[in-house]
Amino acid sequence: MKYYELEHTFNGYCYKNYDNFKSKKGVCYIPEYNTISKDYETEYKIPVDKIDEYTYYTYDDIYNDTYYQLKHFYDEDFNDECVEEITEIVFDMIDWQHPSSLLNEINWSEDIKEIMNRTNKKEELK
Figure 1: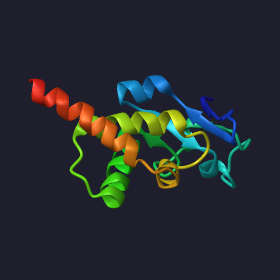
Figure 2 (figure 1 turned 180 degrees about the vertical axis):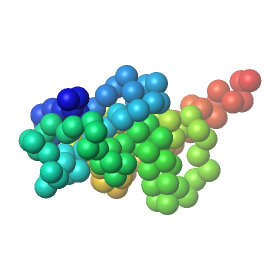
Figure 3 (figure 1 turned 90 degrees about the vertical axis):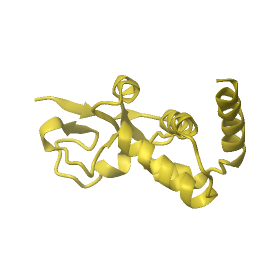
């Protein structure tokens, strides 16, 4: 039987697949909270055939969470490159929690300003 194995992180446990994240295909993240009190053999080993769409995140899920959280809190007209960069930062940082929880914990104002300035300058050069 195939499993998603959650690994120990600084703050808890999670499953992260950097290859799936970079290729934007498949399951790339499972937070620890989504495995608690499920009917698995162990809390940190999830059978692939027992996982449901509410247990895991794909690249698109994390991207969409990032986009909607940024839009809600910062009310900016974000370009795609900005959302993609922050999505990558979020994926690198999450280590047990849901992406939306991490997005709520951090003030992204300076990151957004820096990324938007850089990406807008690229657009002007074209």
